[in-house]
Length: 596
Image (cartoon, rainbow, N blue to C red; front, side, top):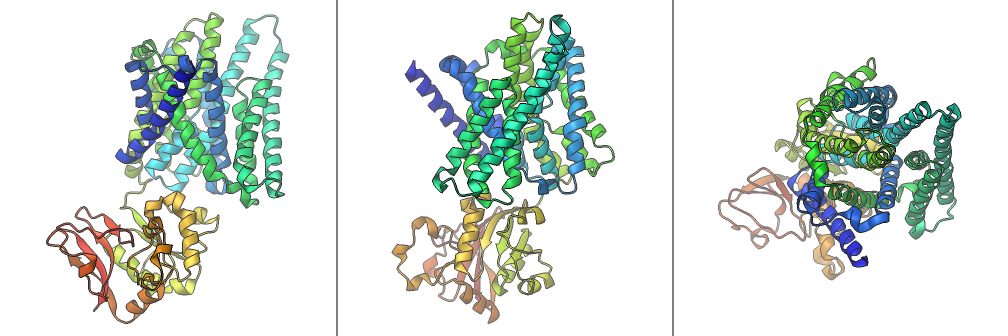
């Protein structure tokens, strides 16, 4: 038995991460790949059933994982993200959620044929658009910050309230159908929700104080914070089931507010984010692999398909357009937000909980809940996953340009380099704290940002979405290294480069690691002062056409010529680094810095 559980967990973990990698590789929404993977190993080929293999551990493991994912999402929120659109966000998470609840309930009753009581339970649950699905989609689609912020905040704030609405509807039904229960039974529900909020706030503040006062050693910060997250979730769940998600969301929001003033709290963000990615991958495969073939077959019935279509094309758009009347959102933004509402882990897990309870109590039609939920989750994930990017571009809410380059440090060379990239129709932004150093770029019409690129507020002052590569080209090599280290998680290590620390011909290269050379730009002698001296003394950036494969290698390049990057036939560019071997194909163009 232990071997079965061990093998099942390892296989699911490996498949989850592989699904994430495959999605990145083929540019598909990761949630789609994970769902398909779970269906293949579960109900389609019957290779494993995680729910049977894990037994009593199945539900608690998923619940704890969801708690961590919700905390990660809420702790990453910053009120500055919704500057200028706070009215829209507030309307969507209040009036919009209420309209979606009522609309979803009526659709479940009239289209899917569920009883009115069950319809209002499931309708409350279906208001969720959680971070487990929204954030991966936003990462792939590269939306403009304003639209992405609305979708992100809605997903994280509404996620814990969906189960609470479903639970509230269930408690109301019990009061109405059970004579011995009175209104004080409902007061218990509201009291439990209030207790969950208090738990979340107190524990969030406690952790913030512990970190700010230095009571936690650096190497224990992340584990201790995760332990407090699980404790917060469990305490709220003991008070009343399904309130744990509300508690950890409040805890995350509390810590998100304090981390603006306590920088050490923000230092654990990447660790928690990595854990969240791992858990998201695992949970989706666990849930989809545990579905039965009967459930999958039931998905394709006319009432369920009709219900999903009504939710997609009527309930969601109507709730957004009505709730945002008179707000700051434009028509294109309302159209995009009104289309995107993928359901995910929370809907699947909580619907299973209510299905079991309602079936046990003899409610007719409760057995349909799992199939109904899976249909809505899978279809919305696929529909929104594949259409979000194209629709955003059509509405001019996404990035339609070629991947851009962010250059840190304004100098004669970096300005000339940026100007050349612009001639290739590659978006460029030069960042520098000095307006004087940026003057040359401004005069040439090159986009600039005057400010400290390492400051926390930078991401709210400038849109970095169009840029996929960052080049640190200041004269301070320590600063270059710090910029590269800070932005590597966002841009990726393969897209993070900086100028060398000195002339590598004059130092012992054995002291430089092989991996470090992969991120050091151009040639051994291409240091800051030398590049700028050459630009200021008549050197220019030029192209050398390649007419025969590998006709030119580094050994054939004249000593006074510095290779910068290669323009491939598909117009992609490859920056030259100390590690990268110069491989040229026929039709490529080698861009160099040379005299004249």
